[in-house]
Length: 485
Image (cartoon, rainbow, N blue to C red):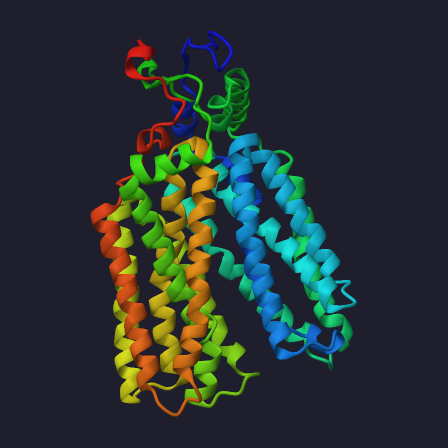
């Protein structure tokens, strides 16, 4: 199985690279992918929790609005990083980007810990956001392309759900770092900014041994390198004592030169060739982002204003909420590969919305307390977390390989923009806590939005479970049937 000619010529090249990757059993190689690449969401959850807890406002003499703006600047950096690096990872490869973006994050987050002024902190929070935003695009692309098709759903969903593991690490660290009786005020928050870089230094070493995606190589004129990479992966699998079956020749795919991906070409692919899938990705990303931002960024205010929980004690209620969000993708993820994408997305989005609606009715009736309301949140977001993770899986697998990174970045940016409005809206609905009516309406609206997102996935979704990425969406470089012979 050799390349007949260099990529980019008129002669199609025949390759079994996708089929060979998909027929692999689960091995240590795949665990190295999960550990080496999956840390990105842990770092993001850690960053959000560290920054939201503050501590630096006293040292840098910041106002409340400036503290809030610090988080916004980080999120803006994520959007810019996703858009810029999303296009770049499609152009120059997954490996270069997941090394570069992690290095950017490590440097920026570490330097933020040395901040001596507000402007210095903001600059490096923005740059750290750039790195994490780039991680989202490069990592989701690489995971989907390196993991066998029958495991792709559960792995992608579980990895995205580890965001909450990072948030729990950050919340736990803050119990000591922000306690002036344990660590001086000027040092606690600085140490918090160093936690992510220390973890990242370990991971960047592991990433050096993760190969470039053979699928990306195959579709970018580097078929011989793609074949060598798969040969090396298979050799490692055989060293574990696994016997690999031969791949039938009829599973081969013919590759030709892909078209240039200018803005007009990319827009045409999203809006003309795949309008239904684009609407699906837009709907799933926006609905989950709106609900998450609405609840997550205001749950502390709800506990304080309606249940009279002190600000210091609200963190106690955060942990079960985070645990539910972490367990949902881990427990429900495998069913996205067995029961199927459309059924599970409808179920997770729908059940999350239903539980939220029930809790809204009970909240309005005054029958909940802080504990029981938190239990309802935990149950709702156990399902919502798996659904939200499946949104990232969906947009990363239903479009052609050559613009996978860009697809993730565009829908991520749209969802962040939509989600950014939710905390402000729900903050107004909460008000001073004297009336429950407005917030109840907000909860019902949020529940309806999630249920609508699930229904859209049912009618517009793609049954991608167990399918090769190349079967879900033809690569732009796939040879037409006539050219393939």
